[in-house]
Image 1 (cartoon, one colour):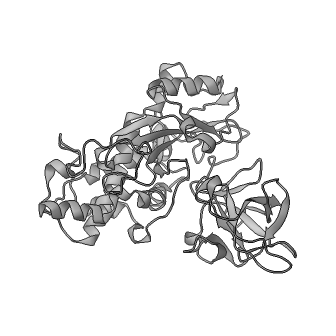
Image 2: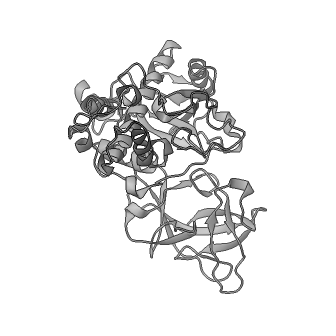
Image 3: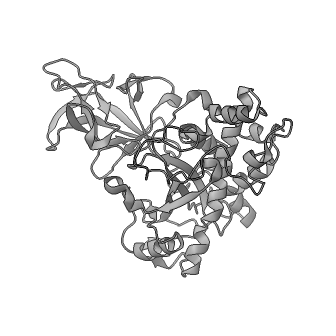
Length: 439
């Protein structure tokens, strides 16, 4: 945590630059997250519910154009001998996750927050991010940072403003300025993400096993996974590829001991997620790991996952299936479903930095305050980000692919559709699948 430049704070508690950077107001004997047998309600000291922290790293090699020199490539893609940060994501203990949790904590700027003089050391942190936290869209680094904090950082309860206010009140050294309290959580999110990234040097680990970027040599999935697992305390790591079998991303899963401010991340295996282990597109052999700056002749410009065209995307319909994979209904333009009539046309649009938006002619789809699926938002910023399995067509949300309803609508009646946050053990009477069927 950073020391305020213009305010007095307790150095031993809040400064990551001191030797005593543990949160002294939290118990030291807390279990690792997702291992407790009873609820620990103090979410300022123990991330609950939830508590898995996933650090995602990019390997982007494609420059915006051919012929860039080394400094230009580094500017776009980060150091030639380093993966880059995608984000730090808090997941629930079953592999699902919440997203965009607290609108009152959302940010629309990063540069100013790190250069306004409120906290010492933030300019150095910004420089680290500028080098190591690169977007997969050229020129979109700050947009990625804002997206990552709003989507994931706003869901980390340890960093909520009321926690900083409470700890400061216990020592009578705190500010009550809500802007400063909010900024503390924002800075701590980015600082913890960068610190953890520096401890997980994927490039160096692979290099140590003879796995280096090449335009000629390819690698097997097992040898990449084995190298990373060995360096990650023997815990299995998730790797992913694009549709061309090119290595694009690495995911390191952790449990957390104590508050996020302590940064006591404990490695865990991706297979501990059970049924929610993510699907890897990497094939068993022939994985390409190209050097940064390489532009294949048969490759299209830009880099994989560049967000797509928000106005285009795939067109199709949303059909509803029961547990026997029998089609029993479809979704209409407002997000409700019916069993008779005509389905609405939907667009499946790649969202910036991953996942997909759904849109009918009434607007973008999201969930209302009652967790009901609804499609009427005109503002793309209000669109929910959905998961999409290209092989099965299944639509999910926050790595949950189980949908539910309390009734099956008859005749021309409309029914309401919900995402089952509890997975297979959801509270809805009918358990359903939602699939996108291309036109």
